[in-house]
Amino acid sequence: MPEMTTYAPGNFCWMELATSDQKAAKDFYSKVFGWTTDDQPMGPDQFYTMLNVGGKSVGALYGMDKAQLDRKVPPHWNVYISVASADAATAKAISLGGKALMEPFDVMDVGRMSIVEDPTGAMFCIWEARNHKGAQLVGETGSFCWWELNTRDTAKAKAFYTTLFGWTVGGDANYTEWKNGDQSIGGMMEIQAEWGPVPPNWLAYIMVPNCDETVSKIKEAGGSVMMDAMDIPDMGRFAVVADPQHAVFAVFQRNAK
Image (cartoon, rainbow, N blue to C red):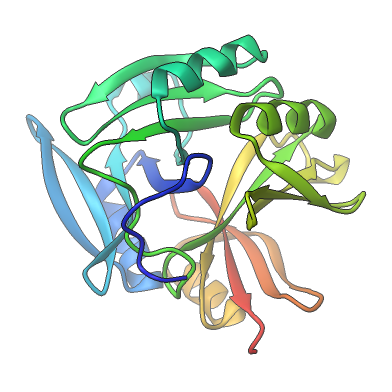
């Protein structure tokens, strides 16, 4: 996928790590993916760290505040979806059974956003772009490339997201594929009993040149493996992992063409 300058409504546009240890997270992701970091002031002794590949932004991270830490909010990756109007999209999400965890608000002059919980319990962010359109690089090595909803009620989730964003679905009984227009943008799986007490969640994938080598780097850097590397027939190889603060994500190696 080429460098991105704008996002169609309904496309995933930004990834943001909320972490309990900002410095440790910067060190970990820089070691594993070669990301460079750029700290942007966002308040007294607070920084919003941009994550870059070759000078192009792929996401960001920030340290959670005391209130979040006191509530024991676990470190996690926030998934942002582009919309034309944050207010209209949030109102529609609520009408479809979602919850506004944070009502729409302005983020300086860069955009307007809200945080929504879908009817099955998975959280995502709504983004109305202004000066910040989203990640400048997507679907290339070192950038995010796929987004997957894990939920216990796939029928309810399907009804919610197709109505809210106009997505269509493909795939089979075991795996739902999300499409925005003609573009495949993500998928959905039902949470399995053997996974344990996993809450509904959006799982983001990062493109890597070699899945197994990346998993080794993750372990060496203090991360952990949630699901060992395995092949996806005719597609590639992936693993589900966590950083040292236990924020979960996946890595994906695409088959050579």
